[in-house]
Length: 358
Image (cartoon, rainbow, N blue to C red; front, side, top):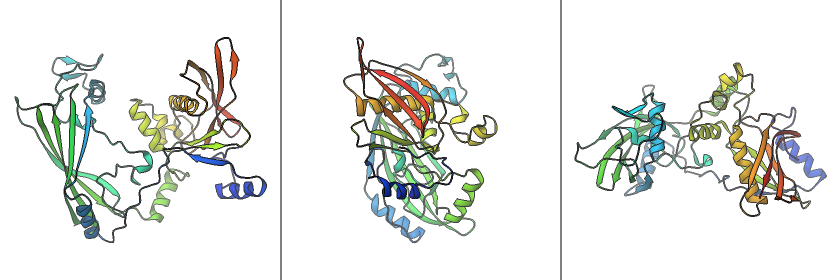
C-alpha cells in the first residue's frame, strides 16, 4: 500500500491512525540518504553566533582533493556561451585535454558541495562553514582572488588538485534596516602538483531565518505543497515478497540532478513554466532519474549478479512532492536467464515499468 501525495481529504497522520487499527504497520527500513538533520545549538544573537563559529573552527583546515576533469571545464565554458575556452581553442565538440590551463575563475566549477540533501541548510546551501541557527540565510557578499603570473604554478586539466579551506573571521554586524547578521570570511587555497596556484577569499553574510508565518504565506503564494527533503525508504510487506521502496523527490533534489546531467529542460526546475506552459501541476521527476532508481532498487533488493539489461517504458509523469513506490515481482526463468518486472507506481497508477535481466 502507498500514500498518494494528492489524495484529497487525507493526511498522513489520519492514514497511519486508521491503518494501525486494522493491521500491523509494515516494518520500515530507512535508506541511507535519510540521515538525521544535524542539530546545531541555537544562537541568541549575532555576537553569540560569531563566537560559536570562532570556537568551532579555530585552528581547523578542511582539505579536499579532486582531479580537475576536462569534461566539467567544457560544460562550464559552453554554459557561459564560450565555445572557445582560450582564443583559438575550441571545445564545442570535445573537452580540453590534460595539461590545459584553467581560465581565471573557472576553478569555481570544481570542489562543489558534497553534502546529502538532508544535510543542506533550510535555504539549500552547504552548511560546512555556515553560521549556527537562527542565522541560516546565506548571501555571497564579496571576496578576493589572487594569482601569481607565470611561471608560477597553474591549475591544469588532469591534475590532482587540493583545496584547503579555513575560517578567517566571523563578525557580528547590523544590516541597513537595523537587523542582526553575521559576516563570515573564509580563505581557500588551491594547490596543484607544482605548488600553490590560487588564493580565493570569500565573504558571506548570514541573516536570521525567515519567520514561520512569513515563510508559510510566501509558500502559499507560489505553491500549495509543503516541501520536505527527498526521501527513500524500504518497506517490508511481511508476505514474503520483495520489500518495496517508497520515494519522494523535492525540488532541490530535482534541480541537483538537472545540474549533474547538464539538463536545461525547464519542466524539472521552473515551476512557473511547467504550470503555465506545459500544464503540469508541479516540477516533473526526470525519466532518467526514475530509471536509475529502478536499477538501484533491483541491485539492492533483487540483484543476483551483474545486471544484463533493462527495457523500460514511461507511462505517466511523477512530480516533486509525490510519494510513490518502486516494486518488483519474483523473477521469471527463461532460456536467456532470469528476468524481473519492476514497476514505478503512484498509488495504483503505473508511471514507469521495466524488465531487468541478470
